Image (tube, rainbow, N blue to C red; front, side, top):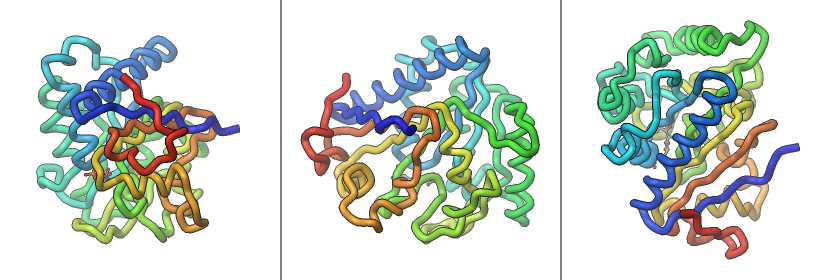
Length: 257
Ligand code: 6PG
């Protein structure tokens, strides 16, 4: 039975970034205490970027030992790893380099591949190998970070994408309405098996889509990609700022630290 989403609302962008970094540290500590390692999947976007910069800031660098962490990607754009549009480039510049993360800790999707389908199959093998998952099973990550697009997309699962119905593959190739067009993405099967799924959403521009996902009024809203994110056994946490939460019913509005 899926748990109800935990909705945490920070007063402003600064408290949001602090709350996000503290939450990731806390979830990482729990994973390492329970399993001796922390398996986290990163997303792209300016909101996740705010978290990465907070984690690499002086206030947080000495508060967590990242040496037991393996980093995966929820999705990647099909561009080279040094392209400014690459989610790997974003994470490498704002998180891996400042925190001295070793390359062996990072499982990168080969966005540069000229054959995205082959890159998807290769990442599935990498994902299973790094999580010690058998070929017929789906891995359980400790934490999957997700952003939210104004159209209700998350990772690179866009409205109407056939990947939303893909219950065979762990990684799918999708087409995005935004540049760059071709993407690699975790499918809902992987995302929904995570122990914790954390949506990172901030800004007034997301208030409408946050309401559509958390307080849907129509079947179309219930079928948006982010609406289909529902952990099988894990926790679903939404970390919002007040602006992004502005259209939620007041009973869903709770201010976190
Ligand atoms: C990507 C992300 C995507 C992103 C959302 C939110 O590759 O772009 O995975 O899902 O998280 O579009 O992006 P913003 O936080 O920039 O609005």
